[in-house]
Length: 488
Image (cartoon, rainbow, N blue to C red; front, side, top):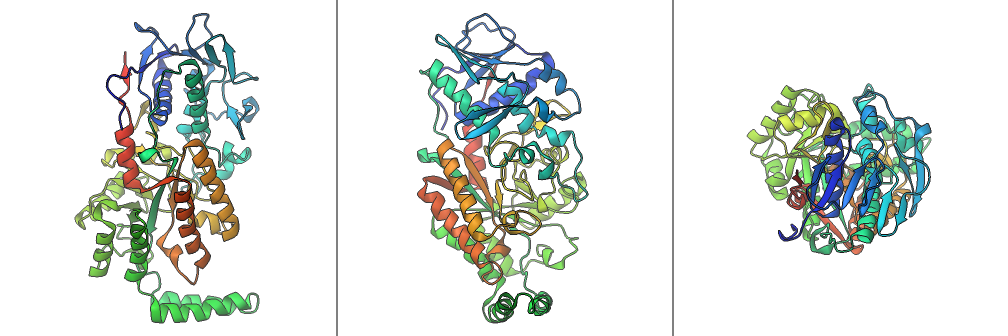
């Protein structure tokens, strides 16, 4: 995976304000981790030949110059959001990319063998990767940040991995100005893109006798306004749930089907003993069938689905983590239940508890790139002005988001077209999609089209030369791929 030791790192010179240095360093390291290239970062002065300069305009000759706007340093020392009126947009391929702290006009200016990147892609990347717009706003009453209040929503950019596109611009400049530089393959076996698979086990046995009765009464009330669908549900549930359904067989079939195709997935398990819905307290009194199911998954793929106050209270998180560990499962990954996740709080708790990765950073009500990237990255601690040790594997698509009446309200057909477009763009740019499909969504009566959609998506991604993997496999791959960047 790693570049050979004999390969020289690219020397990057930072000529920026001292308090902006850690932010610029982090953004550049994130760029080059994605690009697969070692770098050595110098501050103010470099004793070696510099290939990339990041700072205000200079007359000195460097192969690549990235323009820095000093206003960025003072801006990120404040507590306000960036105004839309100051955004600059420029067409890059099929996308209109937004740039912050940048003058209007062209992105590249070529002068002989020198390329000037006239947009401050470093400060712009920091804005998105650090979720600055969430840092300067409060969560809603439900503990979630709203997609509708984001720059991506206002400018219809949810499905554009903006930071990854900035990295692509930088790679283009390096390929032209420094053609001798080689980039490592991003994914194993030279695959064109990656799709990571995960499931949330919100319920072990969703269909209790009481729940089946509630569903029957609900569908009886629907008979006058939706007779065909109500009758289908009434008859289907009686036949399926009374004669066929068994939680162990139904849930195990999902994982076994993936494994027969050669894929693995990560399962997030609830360990909070105080869930108001008793069906979600399954780990407390786990029976042999649940143990057998988790064994099928492989205990290394069982991770924590943090509930209640786990995303905002260290004691709650520690208790739930301990419950999972005492049940016999090693745990290094985290996902917040219902994606109730605060960038400034939850990453700190996860790091303090010794967890290695998270996969919560997605919007509940919309698919897309909440942090402007599909690429795994180390999030940023605003309070201490440093990267966290935790690896974030951003969540791109959740099944509930697609079909929920409170979210995107898509039919399975419309969702298929959307997912197909995400896969096509992922292949084109070497991207990564992270999928979350709840075990509940594989119910053949309530979600027949969505169950089929999942298996279609895996087949389609494989046909598009995607590497399909679990979140744990993605973590292992990416932490091996991360180059130790050098300083001077």
